[in-house]
Image (cartoon, one colour):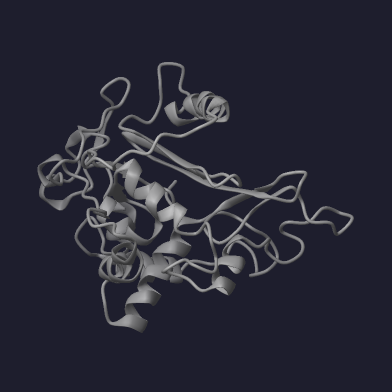
Length: 271
């Protein structure tokens, strides 16, 4: 971020528009359609397109048209500095108290906790940085279970969301579709019976998250306020297998109430 700010001669951290302007001046890594590479910038640009079309901020549009219809009221774009922590939001930690130079102009270059000030979450709205509870995320993902009934997308939009991209990005040399692919914001895996598992993970300094939609109608999310454990593994990856086995062992689920949960960062479109 500091590099972009210096190149454009603007205060650090740069705005979202500054980030897009900087990258639009850079050469492409390859011609569109020739290769695939996951890139946060694409989602940042998508957020700006939404703002141009709707005359709303990206956050306001998502709240009004995606979250509110699903009864999700507390999700919001997070902030990077501890003083700006949202009500009910957890604190984030690193294994060894890692520090890096601040990217914020007021104390630019000063060593700060890497999870609080060494990068700017607010700039990354379209490509991650929402804070949410696990219940919020499961409510969002579960709304996609029935394409005919979802309140936020048409049946065709849901189909396109999970469909494999055009050849050759999700295809083997024999032209057959692979068993897994990256769709529109989801990692998709096809089981031998043809049913789909859709999922995504995300991580930032101080947080890691995982969300999965199973073909049996069950959906679960794990949010951690640390990025890695002592052996450098992501906590969500260590938990995922055990959780799947535990879920498979349940034969009857109790009916309960949804209790309020603390916020934690859920960076599914992030790094």
